[in-house]
Image (cartoon, rainbow, N blue to C red):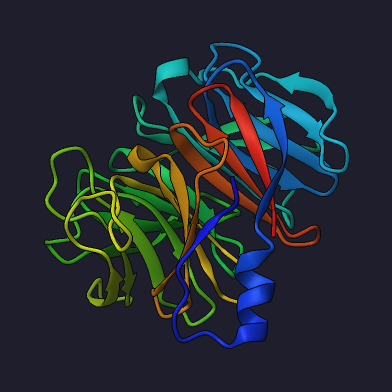
Length: 284
């Protein structure tokens, strides 16, 4: 089934390049929940819902499974997200049960834990290579130093940004935040300033129609076009938004309870982790 596209106000050539080419090219079977996806150099890392061998390492080129990594102290039901830093050659995993971040050094295999004063959920790396942690219970974003794990700043989100699950800092120094959980009224993607106030948003009421979301779980930004990909988990789709948070299209082919997103810029491939035990690869 081809992607469903509803695009308004976009230049025709831009539309062809960013929307019409979306297609599923591969399914990487993990046989357990794929909680997060990221890469460093030529390796693709998938966070799995396991007690040991939690990280599957694949070739980014042909998706061949190379080996597994185990992170001591990281338990199956406490893991929420994973990201990576190419500059520091490390992986970060969020641990909600222990309110900490596990930092795995890919060169030495050393693991250290950074405490956070809340339940950490979504993770991303800022343009300055620090770690951005989304904290659901206190509705805030926390930036941690990549070198020490020290808290550099906190962004307190405005009161109606309830249950944030993931955030990304843009090159404009603003933040994209997705929020909404189960019975919440608002399920949105918001553009937020460093004062925590929303300047623009996509969606509002929970739903499945075009223009609505049902548990916006994870984000990825195309640094070339500035288009935004959103995991719309309970609608079993990924929604593509314009840089101004306007609906462009949605992709639902082969997706089932998607959780995490990773956009590999060199190959322009979007990796979508699913709760049904696979990673779906979408070519942009």
